[in-house]
Amino acid sequence: MAKDLGAFRTIGELSKELQIKPHILRYWEDQFAMLTPLKRAGARRHYRSEDVEMVKTINRLLNEEGYTIKGARKFLASRRRGPEMVEDAPQAAAMPLPANTDEDSRLIVAELKTIRDQLSRALTAA
Image (cartoon, rainbow, N blue to C red; front, top):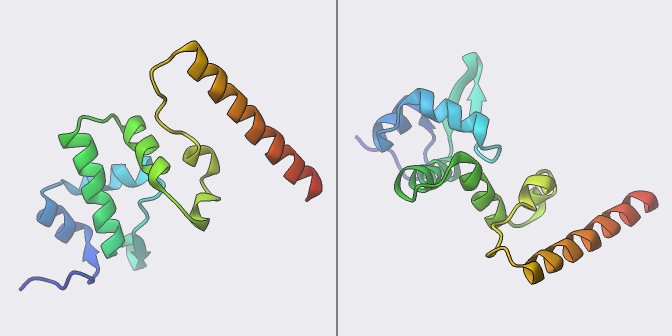
């Protein structure tokens, strides 16, 4: 009997469903801060539907598109939007860079300096 789409999945169920070994799922939790299944008594993991989608995306990036873990982390961070971005601000700021030209580098450095100055003013005002 299949579970509803919105139902929680245990690590064993998710492992079997996506054909990913449980130790890989636990490793990805360490490597991807945005992957946070609920942990119940005895540290039993329960994956919500958004966790399942995140695991599917991570699997696709790593195993189909050839991203490294660091690259997949940057890709996922660049796609995050909303208030949860504040928690991971240093990670969320990491975005793929265009082809490295002098003009691109100058623009990037100028933008980073502007952001740094804004953050500095905000911290001083707080």
